[in-house]
Length: 53
Image (tube, rainbow, N blue to C red; front, side, top):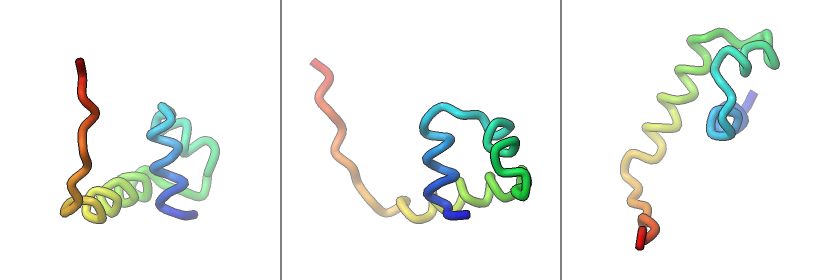
C-alpha cells in the first residue's frame, strides 16, 4: 500500500475507519504512520497560498 494512496483517501474526506474497512490488512497505526511520513516529507516545502479576495 502506497502512502500516497492512504493520504489521498483521507484528503478526499474519508475517515480513518473507512480507510481501514476498505483495506482490512492495514491497522490504525499504519494510517497514522502514513500521515507522519507525509508530514515529514513536506515539512521543508513552502506552498503558495491562494489569494482570498
